Image 1 (cartoon, helix red, strand yellow):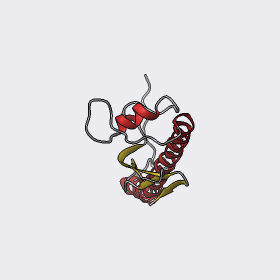
Image 2 (cartoon, helix red, strand yellow; image 1 turned 180 degrees about the vertical axis):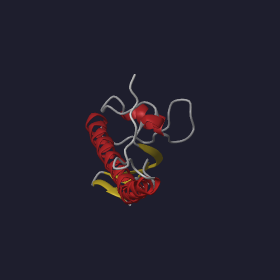
Image 3 (cartoon, helix red, strand yellow; image 1 turned 30 degrees about the vertical axis):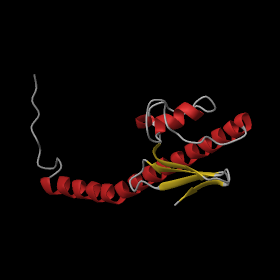
Length: 142
């Protein structure tokens, strides 16, 4: 087996050159990482807004079937409005996850006025937990 001897003209990378490359890569990562995180948060917010629109459509389908909006989102056997109660009332109208942990938002509250309108408040699962209001007039981030 032949071994090869380094000739003085052949060079590998020096430690300084490797450190410069590492510094350049670290600087690029520092520039790109915040934008990626921001994009992911914006995407989560948009998904939650879209899913909130789906809930709004389910409310309209419920209105068509029962001639009124749901009085509450209290699940059978529970005492307070909840995501599970919303799923129990609206799950047959739209395809939403049965488990809140798999949803793109968390349920906050439901209010139905005497006049027949409603407001559902949810929070997106983004970094700032954007509040989203669902009403008969539309979906809006607050």
